[in-house]
Image 1: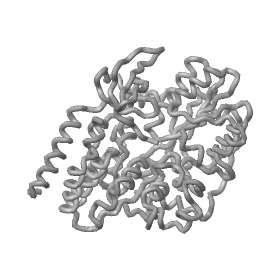
Image 2 (image 1 turned 120 degrees about the horizontal axis):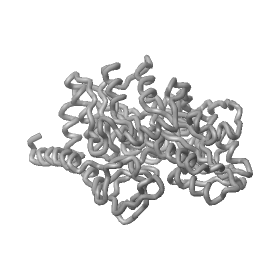
Image 3 (image 1 turned 180 degrees about the vertical axis):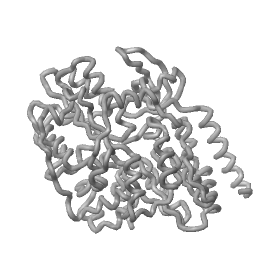
Image 4 (image 1 turned 45 degrees about the vertical axis):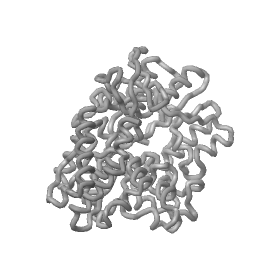
Length: 362
Length: 81
């Protein structure tokens, strides 16, 4: 398929590996932020193709993984109500809350449905006016405009039976937190190409300036990632710290203005707790007060829930790139995609699940 | 989660306030909202995420990148890189 096959060309991939090997002179630690990029790296074995001096650590860019356990518990409480139809992206159903997951609610007879797009939840709301239809609005900046559109459209149509449990997160505050950590080892970042497709890359230019760290906006195919790695290695070897855009076929400096405008109309920036990481100031989005009638947390009056993570799960360190999934004693034993202890084992974009799927024998 | 798939717009229509297109991905055709890509027209390739086109793929940019990469591949085969 056009725009896919050419970025999976083994001949070009090998040339890039050769170029990386030619340039690199010492150990370099690079982080890809996005879970989709982690998935490509593991699937194609890119971490094993590149020279051994290059260590790839995996970032927190998996929304399923970082949605806080309290929000999962709220989703479970809402979805368990007999008057609610709860609609979610598929990956969220197996994420463990503090006692059960959404699949468990469905198995007990709850009306829990999987949707590909938030607009499907609107369709369900129009078709079943006697049901309270709640959409689980999670995701990074890539997904926020689509979720914003669903709420905006619901308000325009004066739909009375649609609401959203919104838990959006933003990438740049998380990178900032990682770079400020005294334990940080990351010397260069691959910025998430689809987040930047929406947002542009001006926020990442600020990170480059503030921390003197090279950042390359990267795509999602093997050739994209190898080219991004090659660009980062060249910057490090030259002693440069710049923002470069490998994914220029989709990403512009300004991003999508209509998408950003709709996001700002519907959502406002808020402090947000990240599962495994903790509270990060101004790192999320919540519905604006003008859209309170569509805010499931307000409608269902859920009290502040608090919950603890399983102690044996090291996902906090995995999400910050401080540990690899295989460093966890529970990996592949007490924790598998069928019986996950932590969220990174659930989503196919979670680092633990990607290692489990493609690196079973270690 | 941030997965987005490239496809070609085969037609567009206005529904309510939105512009919606049929987008072809290999053999499969699905509808996608085009509100975030006002610049995209029939025949253009767009990246689609959760039912919304999030960018119009820049054919010139893709061609330029590919030429550059292809040259790198050739140079290496000829033992010049």
